[in-house]
Length: 231
Image 1: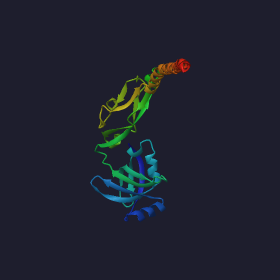
Image 2 (image 1 turned 30 degrees about the vertical axis):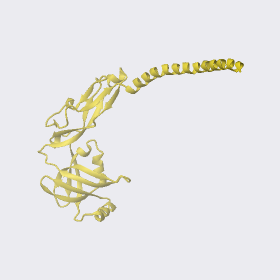
Image 3 (image 1 turned 45 degrees about the vertical axis):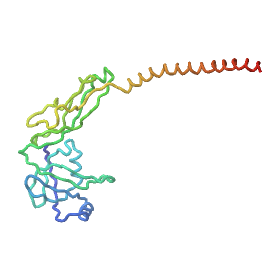
Image 4 (image 1 turned 180 degrees about the vertical axis):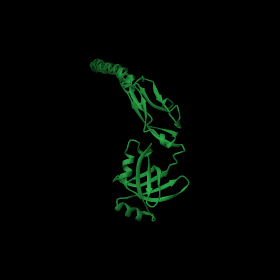
């Protein structure tokens, strides 16, 4: 979704690890702007401004403007980024120019709402299987998310990608048969009940064997006594 946000970018003529370190000392992050049949441009951007976009409701699907100093403002999207695995700081960002007149393919998150009847009435368990679906649409019509109502689901029922309501220029790219969410029976509890039922007779049988052993032993002693008298 397009937002009225503009990030100022500083063009960087030099590249490499040393240049990247110098930029980070200044509080900037290396980035690249490319796409739409134009030459890629190496720039530096504010990591705080980029992180605000990444952590917004629309996240990496946000279309915003980047204005390179000395150049014109262009609509872009964040298509890739790299964070420091230890410190978490933003290390690099890829910004792709967007042609607002042409459809693009994006991943949109899935959000489930409602309490499934199969959970409340049947004691089942709801599982979210797919967290994102792939769609194609015009840049200005990218949805924040797809909301899936699961309140009517019973055990054994599911919601699939084909159940999603597509509007305007949207079309589903993901497989329509892909399961988004379903309600299943709690198999663990059923298995535990069956295991308990099977285990009980085994305990009884074991007890009988244990009781039989002393009787057999007593019989052996009696049989041994007459043999001693003959001697």
